[in-house]
Amino acid sequence: MKVKIHTLFEYLLETTGSEPEAFVGFSLSQPPKLGDFLGDLDPDLSLDWNGQSFRGLPALRDNVLAVSGLSDACAPDDVLITAGAAEANYLAFQQLVAPGDRVVTETPGWPQIDVLGRAMGAEMVHVRRREDDGWAFPMQAFADAVTPDTRLIFLTNPNNPTGRLLTDAELRQVVDIARAADAWLVVDEVYAGLEWAGPRPPSIAGMYDKGITTGSVSKALGLQGLRTGWLICRDPEMVMDAVILRENGSEIMNIMGEVIAEIALRPERYAAALDAARAEAQKTLTMLDMFIAGQERLSWVRPEAGLIGLARVEGEDGETLARNLLTDPYRTFLLPGSAYNEPAHIRVGVGGGAQANLDVGLIRLAEYLGQ
Ligand SMILES: Cc1ncc(COP(=O)(O)O)c(C=O)c1O
Image (cartoon, rainbow, N blue to C red; front, side):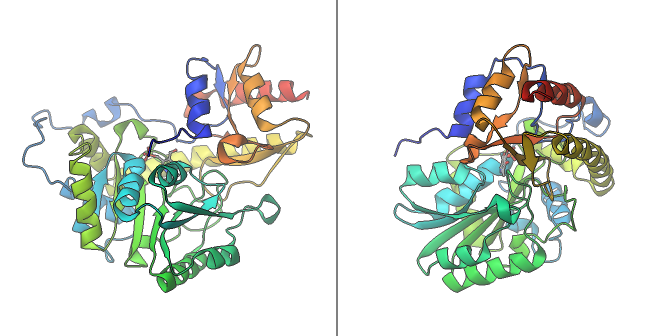
């Protein structure tokens, strides 16, 4: 079936070229520069890829398991290096779901699985997180939605866009529910490492044999342009099916992405980068939180993790605000909540580092809101 564009991507496409002067909605940490890695790169590295593993560089897979806390629970061959978490989600979904299959996911949530599910002709079932409940995961509604014929469950932890976290105990409940239905359980952890309200929750691949962890270097490390992520699952057939599907799409990974990601995920380097990203994010999140508290027309549930959250707007819908704010004299970009089926909201965020001009963006947002 022809794939249909999602509102989120439609808005991004439509606003490409709008040349904003400030951003209040970046979802990734300040991006490093190529020069930061040159000292660790081997100038004799062959760029032909031959002789490499179809699953990804072994050292990179080891590092992925270490940062995911899975070195004991999983083996390096349980990891497939992919073109971002996006490709990991895609490979899992395409290999596991057939037309008519029941897929349970959350709203608001990351729209990728909806787009794929509709194109596939799957039965998409959404459980709703509610703002008046702090965007908590609706465990009872989820338990009711996961019927014995459920094929796959897709969740984000931390949740995009609300930043709400599923705790260890909640993940265990989710696993029990998935196991009772014998359903595959994909948990996208692309924002992991940026938890503010508690420890990083465990990765699902270590908790459930049909659990699939997806992640990448895009968010906490700001390395989105490397297009390097992963899928982790203890079911060898699932991983091999993903290898086979990828061989018939992009075939193999890009070697520069793998090599730089391997360096970025080396323990000392990763710890230092994460510390810096966390310190910066905590500062800017506090700034954004105080800003929202001072705005009569805005309110939000501060994210428990990640760099973005949803803010409710009084007096107009989120899309009108987002579009007006992009024009003169404000020239500030943020995503409307309609991208997540939350039309009364805007998605605000604090990533992007100095280039986002967050402080300028907040001044202009305040002007726009009449304060
Ligand atoms: C929840 C979620 N999953 C996956 C992705 C894709 O990320 P990547 O760059 O790793 O492909 C994003 C990007 O915004 C995301 O928010």
